[in-house]
Amino acid sequence: MPLIIFLLSFLVIFVVLMFSFGLPGLSIAPWVPCRKKDLERINRLADLKPGQVFCELGCGDGRVSRYIAKKNPESKVIGIELSIPVFIFTKIISIFNNPSNLKIKFGDAFKEDLSKVDVVYTFALVKSINGKLKNKFEKEMKKGAKVLSYVFSIKDWKGKQIVNKPDKKSLSIYIYEV
Image (tube, rainbow, N blue to C red; front, top):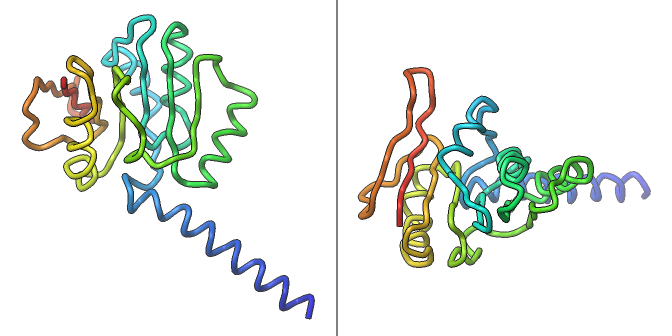
């Protein structure tokens, strides 16, 4: 009997973890971290001023959020993550390496209020960035706010848009102004 209870418990935990890892892939994207060498470029393109708010939708391990928070101590940085295991991992990392202006939140990026955000950064899949996220950015974000999209472009954006790709080996970062 104890073996059956152990196996059932293991199966339940396994299913919950797999669902948790898969859910973000159905929402925005599975966890794939950006290149470390692109962190400074993301920071430069964000061009945060003191008091501004930076929000990373689907922050994964928090790499981008932590970097931005360290480089911009007078700005507020928020990372949103939907995968429970990845969120817990990120919170553990934050115990040892968490700037005071950084908040990592568990939640769904589609439900996050972006009305007070000055810069949104995301590494969302094409389907997500051109679907619900594009509509969310256009409806919620204030005039003059920016969206930085790592690798994937937003189709038919009505505002100002720039592609940053310094060389053939670099990944594109798309900058959109609301």
